Length: 74
Image (cartoon, rainbow, N blue to C red; front, side):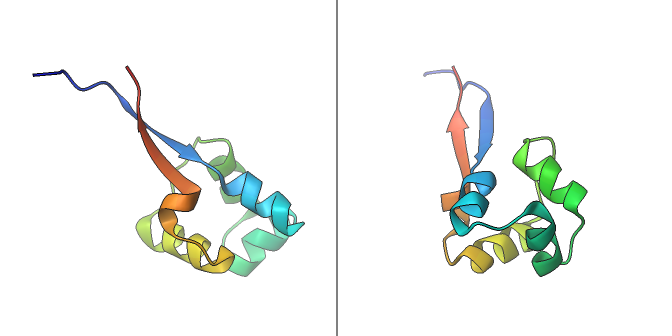
């Protein structure tokens, strides 16, 4: 049986935000969080709660998996 490596979440929030042409502050306000929260999510230092992840996906009109991707590292 193959041993499992570490799993990592890749966050594409910044890409979606920049495609929309909105600032971190504007996104934070729309989602009801602080700009610091958006910064931390974009840098991969903080993973949002499920409700916030769903809210982010809904805001951009995409699936959660489009913004937050789980990859396995070897």
